[in-house]
Image 1 (spheres, rainbow, N blue to C red):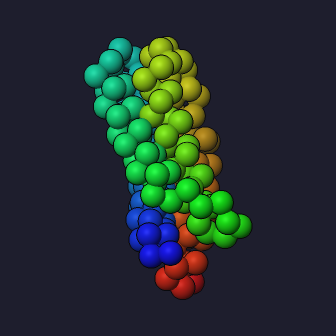
Image 2: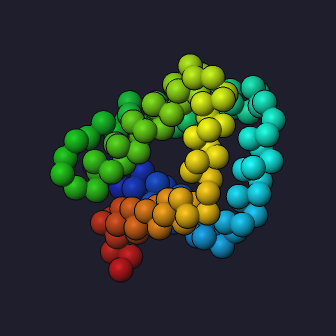
Length: 131
């Protein structure tokens, strides 16, 4: 259970911080995403894949709990990170470019930020009584 509380704090704060940054800097981030996807970035694709794969493996191997509470959120995030890491290694760059451009639109970025803010606040609230 202690690992669940630790991961809930890390994941919760990560989601809240990145969501706030997305909301505050979405115009700059949109511009950066457009610039990034115009170039073929094999090394960056490998780096993103390795990072996601490691995070996903750490969470899934240490916290594969499917209980109907905040712990399942951490497990799902771990599985999503693992799948994302594998996808970065398997799928070609043009697929990621299309996906990144689609989700990089300002409306989607705001939606993802709000979802991250809600999920992060929920997870943190469950372990720290934040609200």
